[in-house]
Image (cartoon, rainbow over all chains, first blue to last red):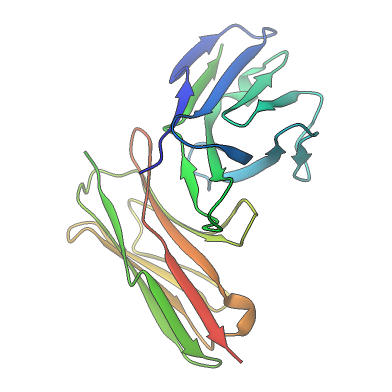
Length: 117
Length: 109
């Protein structure tokens, strides 16, 4: 099956720094990628929808200037958490939707655990 | 490695019927079990979250149960409506997410 990778899998950073998380579709092209986050003991929540070559669409309550999303190619989307604070500590997961076949199947990355000190 | 399976893969029911979607997982060491809805071209919508210490959660017409010992969770949808048509995913959370294979539901008016 299709594989989606995320890098890094874990990151610990100091408050005020920026962290970039990469999401790659390894064996298929994805026009659409989704970014989610999950706080402890809470549901996984959609943050934004990223379409290749266009601006991301953010869910209500997600700050677009804080969570910068770039989807520069059909196989790569990046999420940058700018000026990270401890409350941004969370599990971030991406998914990628295949560009063809009409399957509407999303393939999920393994996630990135961010800890902000 | 955790494996999450959903049965059936596809389901078609007439409007008004009650239905059950099944999710099974191989490793009972989970933090929680979540159910999601996926509409074509859209991100996942979280439906219900069951912590590992809980046995069920309810929201409106939806009820989800969790039996860790048997590695099973069910999503019960009462009085189905055409708007319920979507793909339903379950996910077991351990050190990472393990998503099920999904059940495609069609509710016929």
